[in-house]
Each structure stands twice: as structure tokens, then as C-alpha cells.
Image: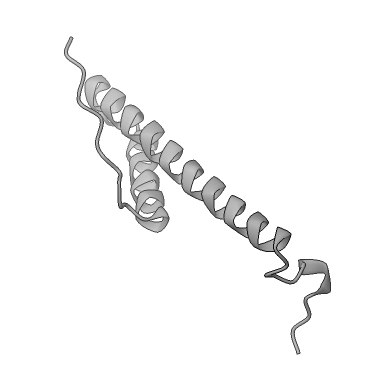
Length: 81
């Protein structure tokens, strides 16, 4: 069986990838999808989930760098006035 080439997610925002992941999950949860299509959707979903996780990790690292450099206020000290 030939494998599909992985879809490039370069340049896809977190929000767009997350929305696509939600759509994939909805299709899989429907239960009416044929096996081959379900497998393709599962592969697409895992790729989208990994993309989202990588973007969240990158954002967390950015925030941590800002905090180390004193560029942000710790949440415990932040107050809305």
C-alpha cells in the first residue's frame, strides 16, 4: 500500500491548524467514515496535533526567554486596574 506524502504545514497558524484538527476529530467521531478514509484522517490529525504542540512549545519558550530577560511581569504580580 502506498503511503501519502505528508502535508506541509509550514506557515499554517496555530489557530488554523487547531480548527482543522477539530474538523478531523469531528469526522472521526462521526463513525460513518470508511476505514481507509479514517486512517488518512487519523494520520492528518496526528500531524496537525504535532504542529499545534510544536507551536505552543515555541510560544512557551518565547515567554520564558522574556521572563528571564525581565521583559515581562510575573502573573502573580500582575493586577488589572
